[in-house]
Image 1 (cartoon, helix red, strand yellow):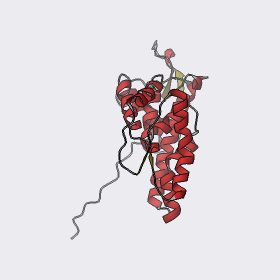
Image 2: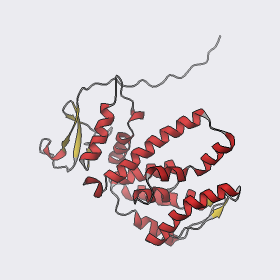
Image 3: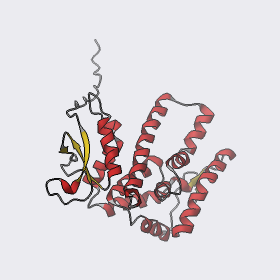
Image 4: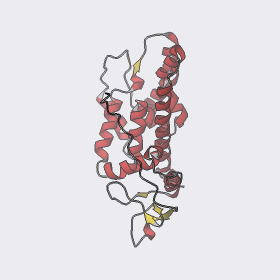
Length: 254
């Protein structure tokens, strides 16, 4: 007799709405919150924490609305990364911006870009070609001079470098900070995340730079189907965070 219990997949909620629209938040019952809300059958979406789900501009609200429109018989949160990141920012980052920014700065203290392979030659070259220009940008633009190391032995970054990095993050909104945190954790690099947010690298270039080591290993040993599927899901979330960083900026509202 086999007593092994097979874990069941969590049951997804059924789609309960027909129409998805957006509306200026200020027009909803006298609510003076600026921005745009997403409506399901005319009712304003709320976050899991029951806060008003209000986004800073129409373009970002439309991205979320499109995710809700794309749901079929069931609502699958895994296919709604813009909604997920936005919920997390509204519920968990508003009022805690300094704490989350400090976490991003701490990540920069042991950043992917600062730890280099010592061999083989081709991998060393690929890392240098992709990462050195980003580090040069950080040094020339806001004075963050990061120290490099070979291998995995930890290297302490100068306090003034991390202070300069922190200062460069100071103008981001809570929504952008949430997206930056996602970009950082998915890429392993706060520096790449910031460079992308500032327009130095597009999303594809930042993602490629973050995956140099993995891609090199795939070339040597071949791809794994499960790993490839996980990477595709991570890319979808990375792309969603990229869209939020751009659209939640003042320029993104234009």
